[in-house]
Length: 128
Image 1 (cartoon, one colour):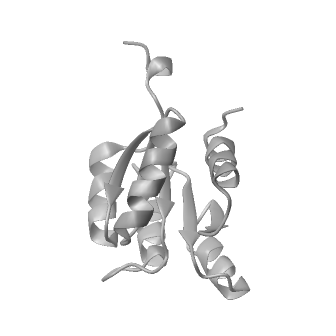
Image 2 (cartoon, rainbow, N blue to C red; image 1 turned 180 degrees about the vertical axis):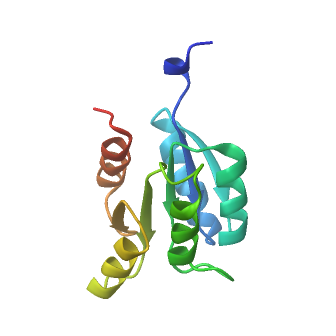
C-alpha cells in the first residue's frame, strides 16, 4: 500500500476526556487518523509506539506536564522530527514562551475555532 494514501496520524495528549473525544471526532472527520493519551507518560509511550505525524499536547497534565513531555519528545532521536503543537487553556505570554523553550512547534489556545486548529495541523504537516 502506498504511503501517500495513508491518513496522517495525530497523537492527542490531554487529560480531559471531552477534549480528547471532540478533537478525535474533528480530526477523523477531516481525514486524519488519531491516537489518544490521557497523561504525559502514556503520551510518550504512544509517541514511541505509534510514530504519529504530529502531536497535539496539553500543558496541564497529571504527573508529567506538557512542557516536560515536549522536551522528552524533542530529545528522543526517533521522535524529535515530529511537530508538537501545545493546545492549552492557559493564555499567558509566559506559557507561550515556556512552550517554545521546551521545543514546541506551535501554540494554540483551546478556545480557538476548529478551523484555526485544523489550519495549524495542516501547516505543521506541510499540507495545503
